[in-house]
Length: 309
Image (cartoon, rainbow, N blue to C red; front, top):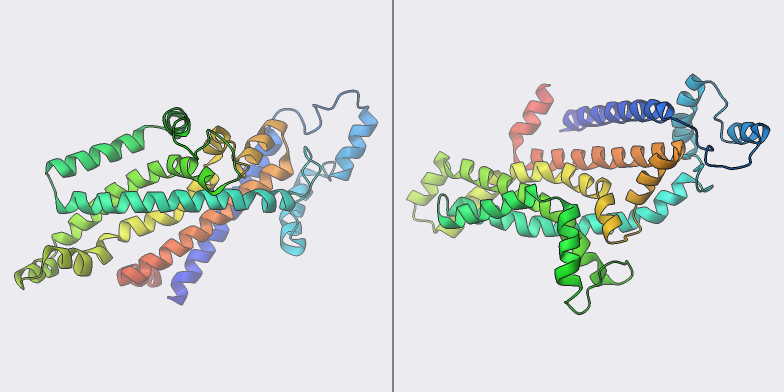
């Protein structure tokens, strides 16, 4: 298990290194500069501003200094568009995105897993076809369509729900449902496939031959192995719910991290773009690691394969 974890950690570090390198050079390749929107600023003043932010240094030195400051000082730099430390911006907005992502994940698991189990148990019946049709709709319909529909038909007519805003507990319901619907659809399909694969195994047929009830066969003998694909999906899904929520955050006016990612790209705010991208990348690596560990606990073959590698 130790070698398994070390291998996953090394892979995660390589992913973060590649993410930083790609984001750094893409940010440098964007047209213009962070201060092109400033009006009536002399060339000398712009030169002083660039020196203040360290943008006057050679490219190789900027590439080296930024990760060094993160490791040694824990500093993500200062946003050139907001004039605030990037770490403070992340610390202020991340709790909102985290809460939204957690609630969306709860919706996804609470909807997707039961639908997948029910669909597998009633295979090739009208229940199965209906559940998978609903799951396909959830996959195909984008969040920027679901969100406005929920605002029109639910928020405008259900007491306590608001079209947009972020201040009371019920404000998280509609954006979380919108964000989690796609993940719920994928979870339903993955759970169905996993349960069907386990139900065809010899030990399940043996349990049935012993006279166990269908509920016990599912709960005691099928769920642990059948949920492995869904558990493996949960890690990257949760990270994607947080990092990919900027559309939903915009629709429902949620003050999360997504808005900063979009603003950083439009204003060519290199430090904010790098900081948010690396933070999102770190979340994805951590959640993938947790998913790998949970998968290894559910299926020892994963640990054996990881140790063999």
